[in-house]
Image (spheres, rainbow, N blue to C red):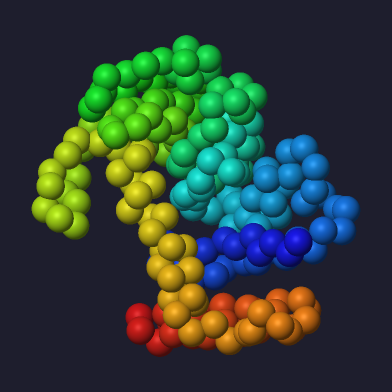
Length: 196
């Protein structure tokens, strides 16, 4: 199938895009997620940017590669990734507690709220901070988790807005769907820039 890999700002504005069509290239196979991130970040590394990613992309190896390029990253992490500290991934913190380990400038932690969340950061201190939910409930969360939740909502907003009025139909050819989706992304970018 076709996949769109997007690099966006925190409001969902698309900065860079990579389309995977199923043809063998470096976006396929083992370690392809790191290749996707590094390719999308080509023009944005070495500028001190902060990158927030979900567990599909994140790894300790990628965090170190980005840090070498003066780019910080924060996000969730899959337990089975290479170089993930086993004492952290296997830990069983109690509700509201967290454990973490530093390896150089990379911090891997696990926090438990309703469920356990494994996370990684090269930017934030691993302190607890108070966060207020939309319903007004206050809760203590590790800073990396709070920042991740704050900055990852843009892509969800973009997906939501694009789903309201899709410009393509199910019956059209795949290449037309790709074209229409690119037009949708351009319109979304224009809308966000107009509203700034």
